[in-house]
Length: 142
Image 1: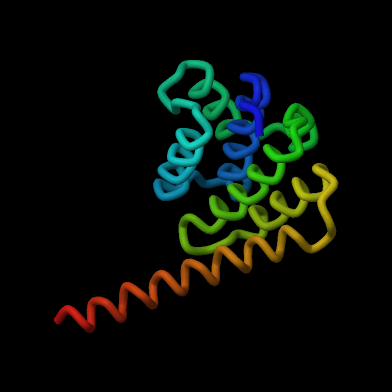
Image 2: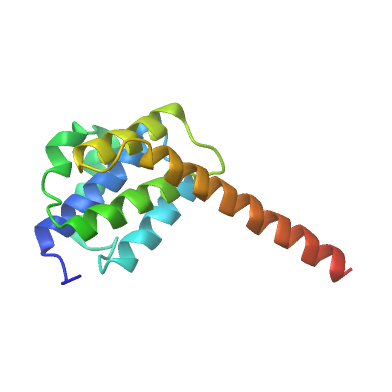
């Protein structure tokens, strides 16, 4: 994938912030995960434009269709959908509003029906496996 342009990356950030705000709460775990994801795509959460976009979505989420349309690159859309699923699960639960946002994004991006639920289930399964590994390792290292 070629490096997406700045407007697509800012739209990526806005969509992610929109998801975080979907349930009316911005949990610390969600914000930390959001910052990690943004850094992974080359955005700094300390950049004034990024910070302004995030805070605007936290305060008053835009209609998802309005901001998602600016993410035009298919690969970036796929990455965004995956990251949305991961972020929706960041606090250990998936609010119905968050699940609905992931599903709405999948539809807007033209992905197959059901992919959003499959992604969320995969993330939750991965978290459970990681927790089980931690539990097993703590028993081994007693």
